[in-house]
Image (cartoon, rainbow, N blue to C red):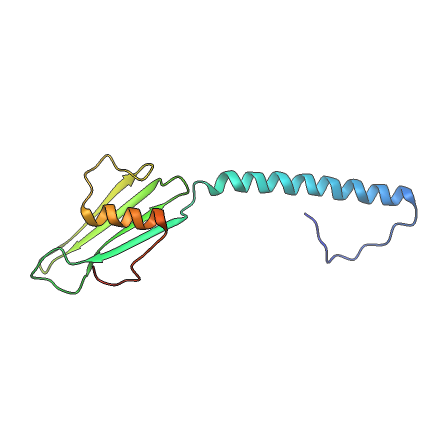
Length: 127
């Protein structure tokens, strides 16, 4: 890796200059290769997040239920929904491919996925 802060001796002649140039060229080639590898790998990282809080049951107020979508660059990932009631809580996770799921999505899940795709959230406000 290039180290711009490392003190090196000034080349005394053209031969030493060429040796340093070759080393810099080799380091630059390695750095370029590393950057290309990172570009490929970043495609699969979570890059888009959407969250929606809501109240699915009339007997429970406060918007304690939520859906959260975690998507990569290609809109692949998951949507997780937690439904809270006084008696129990349920959590569902559904795979997302290209913004869609093979499972039936609720209105809130669809909204959350769309927020992630558009990179918008409702800032934690209850729906």
